[in-house]
Length: 103
Image (cartoon, rainbow, N blue to C red; front, side, top):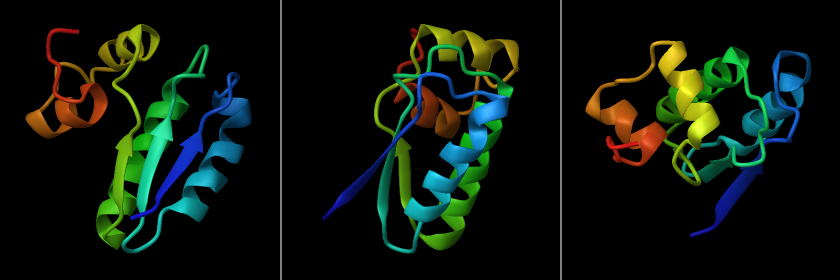
């Protein structure tokens, strides 16, 4: 099985989110396995979370295995908490934190 890695740029935020959206749109396909690497995102904003949530819905609808390549780092975790995405359901905790609720 082939895994498609999609990498977020360091400056991913509202003014630059379009490039990541296009990459995800291209990668998400029926039967595909896609991993999103957000580790390089220095200062993600709410647009990143919104795009990832939309990608999750799109992937689920098309039968694509979509996940983060690594759990949310401290910066993304703080953003998820401020945006009221955390604490979360078990499914969301698995997606964003890879099941690690102790973060």
